[in-house]
Length: 152
Image (cartoon, rainbow, N blue to C red; front, side):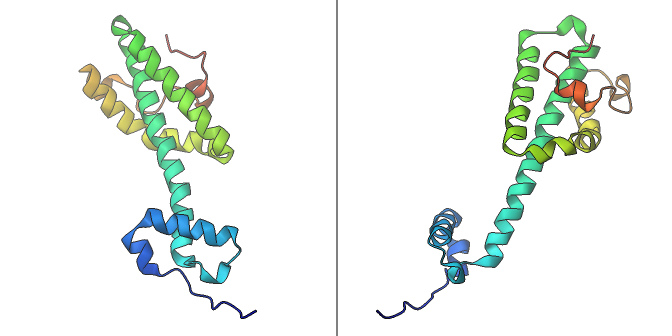
């Protein structure tokens, strides 16, 4: 039986249709046809997955902290919607941690990174000056993620 010549997936497929390229690359991986795989773009996409998870972590923490700030500094305006947003963000973060447990170790650093923008968002939403809120996040990562925690 003649040996089939190895023909790599052209990089141009990646440039033309990433979804089709991904399906084709997965097929080649399953068939163990490694010599035909577009390694450079595959490596880029794998790295992008990690960046995407980190971006999601930061985004969800930003929204969560924003609502915790409003909860604490505007008790008279607390609503089921705010409680629902806090619960929803915690649930989504829990799901993210189940999928990527290593991200739990990045929570404290991510909180520090997003806190200032969460303050800005809370200020915009509440009408309170940014100076109303503490300069540094007043809660630990554990408190922020705890389903039982609502600042009084």
